[in-house]
Length: 297
Image (tube, rainbow, N blue to C red; front, side):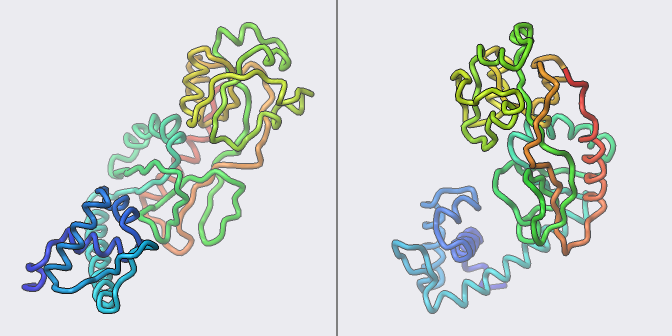
């Protein structure tokens, strides 16, 4: 491998990522460096090779005619290396790569992972908290948890839990709530990213959503729940967000009615790839764990 010793591995990785993703910012995000660093690695590689690999245009970073076959071969080579490294990890301690939304990870899954670890110490879990919709056939992910109606193509989906919404308040505010109309006296804590309107729950009780009072708003449901715990108002919550806070009394669901959203939690895996033992263990564990709902308060 005398030729390989004449170039820097970081330059090869930067060039491969830029060729595959089509831009410096995208390559930088994947490699965890700045776009400037990616550019410098590529320039150094081009000097070492004595040829220009990319065209610099305002619309992206297309390979040059001479660079395209070189970059394609570099891509295949690095893919083989990546596969070998992944196999080494799999053949050592079994690793389970999970992709879940950040709110679900923080409020439900992470507090329970220690339990899974005690049951299955032979499995190492690597958790990626992201809102990106992953493809288990293309991304470095074994299992993902999605919220939606189901029916996705080209994936294996296992139903976990229906998503139902209901108001939650602090214990101090709950003492003043006798009927749903009493919510009109409270500030409403709103999640700016939520697509679930209050009307889903309110319509059954004959209350118009625009009659609700204004309150603080946040771009994260976890922060909304923290605001409710702090006594700043009521929010429309769901089980995986509020389950633990309900169980230990930090919040209260003052009314028994839960409104179905038509969505659910689904465990997603590749449809074409045979599940590993670690995937089967986690799948069975999370199905059983999600079935354990706390007593409604």
